[in-house]
Image (cartoon, rainbow, N blue to C red):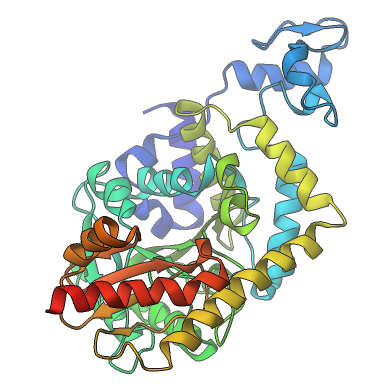
Length: 430
């Protein structure tokens, strides 16, 4: 094992041995190398005559560029587009995103957490979690209503074993008891990664204040029974809270609650700021030990150096400029109101009861999606029928669930959409 990795591991062991026990074999071997990038950073500070360290081309004391590209980006300084971004991300963007997290998550104000590290959007952030904390057969605990890519990120890539629990209770609330039982079922293993995704994909549900408090207490109780937990908040749809739910990330409530619990937040500008193709995400760790936070950041930068090296500099610049704009909050609120109106319209239409012989719907209060629970027809059969006969696309989940993304349907078309889904059900019930 590399000496730097050994030192980082020792640093974590001294401060919090439970976090060390959470690390995978790969996680324990990871470190940020003192190679070209470290030497380049030193040269950037001290090489005032000639800086012949980094592999970019310069001209007239700025990055070399093609006018055919720069002509479409004239509002941006070439230095904010063409050079490599630092491995952890553009420093000013990190600062602004941290400030944004504190503003939008009041629970973080008295918590200790790392600076966010820039990732190539959320999928990449989740894969970093997988690399750091998952060995083959380690348990990944998550609700049964889940994003299918989790299976690839954690299962196919790293060999995690899914331990699922029903997302909802019979009363339609978040199933905290089921979560706790699922975690304790792996108590003999000693550790688990818990994945919480709110607003949830596919259900569009976020816990209420009472449910959030129950989740925190359940996690504390599990930790007190001797389990080490990495609790991941997948905040892909953060901020899209329409009705009765918490209005912040669970990360802020979970961070620092117990030495055996490492809180991790994975978020990004992709959906929060309507910048899907820009692929700018962040990963943040919550621990009351600055030494543990530093070591985890160094290991994360090691993963970055060994995979993508650094995220796109232009994308980070575009996101930063948007966040700093005086028009940003106004425009973002306008888009929020559009999505909220669509969600309320869906609920209004479904609550009329005209479709009740074909389906029920799962409770939803946030995000992009909602789910129907079909009563008679098979979900995949209905999906194909709707495509073939009505030109309607939905997602089939299991035998009875259909996910509907109201985020991409204009409000005026929502009634027609559900009428067509209903007609498809009637066709197949004959």
